Image 1 (tube, rainbow, N blue to C red):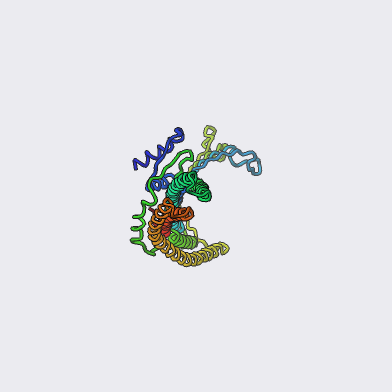
Image 2 (cartoon, rainbow, N blue to C red; image 1 turned 60 degrees about the horizontal axis):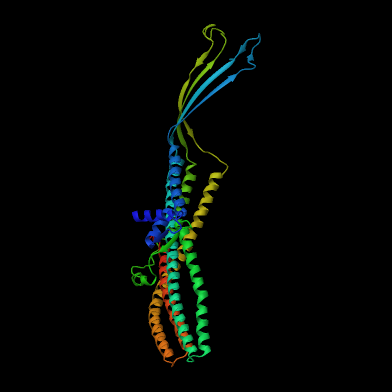
Length: 435
């Protein structure tokens, strides 16, 4: 982990040093992506958000205390016959209210609903990590394939260039025809577009990997490893493979969605149950009433203060709400039926996907075996053609054909390894493996 942190810090140093370079292994690339990719960060924040949602729900079961204050000034007071007025010119009031839920079934069901919502968010975060790991692996393997292909093409270019030089020397000495020289030069020229295209694909593949790892484009990255060196991983990779998709994130998400709807149905039904709450109220009021009928304590006691306190319980019983609750329950049952159908169909799709992925794995492995033999045969054929051509017994056409066959066999061999590794990454994604 320390190496990863240092490596990642060195990557950002590339913003200030043009020649800075970052070297990555596959494991380091995956770890950096899981810690720095915005998609994973957002998914983790969503899990944290549902923690706060549950705390909000739990807070409704705690005592609720509020305070309020008011002031009023009488412009016209009530009067009786004879000019006698009632009321105060100025009134000050402070009131405190305390409520405590004693029985709130809807809140209890909502708490369980929040637990399921959080579980769904956790699964969504896991799905984000699984998808990200698969994409990072594919991008990493894509770089290895492009670099390996470039090596093969460069070797082929060097071999063809040597053939061009030898043919030109023979042509200058009258031992080779102009046709042979032109054919060799054309073959060399034909390699250039392919080499340029491969170099382009390396740059694009690195940009893609930088995007997954949230590394600035200015930082130069190099991947460690060679595609052909992963042959042993291909051979051992088919051990322990199965069609078990119980950990598939898509299926688990649908299961949680169905459970979430069932919780919503219970919460909606709980809205039909009575609820009980305790309450308390304390008020402190002051009126500047003039002395009247002995009230107010005389001219020196201008304000008349009262401070009533009351407590009680309140029972709320839902009786009729315009059929909204019944129709809400019907709506949720309809959604549950939809999710059930989706789960059944999704399970069939995933079963097909995992079998297709296993078939791709086995096909790629067998293709690799076949290409291994083809590479050896193509190398031997080229060696024979090269010897015959230099001895004057073969033609430039034979040599070119053998050279192309050898290059294509090497490229196909690397492609077979790449196909297996990407199929394995896709298989891991389908069965729900995070790394």
